[in-house]
Image (cartoon, rainbow, N blue to C red):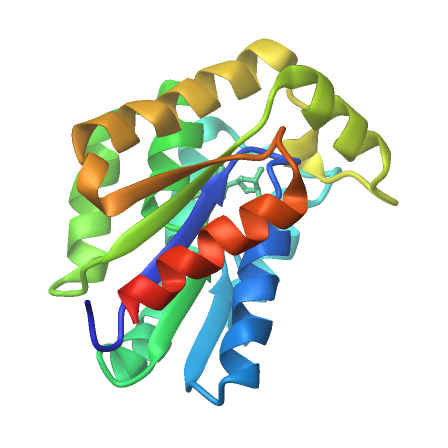
Length: 203
Ligand code: TMP
């Protein structure tokens, strides 16, 4: 459908997005299809430095500072994205929807400010498709408990994650053609083939 799409994986903690994006990357590698995979915050050297600063448990920035740091990390990724845009498939683990879901729907930061800076950073770069991974509260808690260490953003209360997930769902409902919801409470193997089938249609 798209020659070299930009495909984003979104979802709250424990929703399986990082697992699925890695699986897609493995699948493309096996098929010898050129692609890059990055995560946000992070992905490039400087953005990873900013990630450490934001997610460090000792940090206690206010919500506007957090927003600006997430966007600063994104800014550091833009030259890599521009260089590969429409030349290689780009897989991104979290992108602008995470900023809207976490900083606006979760923390109440002004949406206009978020949209303005994202627009400035992205320029003509467009996201072609987003997989939104959703998970219920019990499975989210179960999966977080299995993690060796938790970062600063793994420690909000359940109401926060509920608001964030509802925020993601609002974005999906606005533009259903560009999203696929993956119910991560269901069988992981079935979800893997569900996602790969869609990937085959997208590339
Ligand atoms: P992750 O490793 O689970 O993706 O952790 C990154 C955390 O950063 C996650 O809690 C979501 C959060 N985040 C934001 O709050 N805003 C953003 O713009 C991005 C990209 C991530």
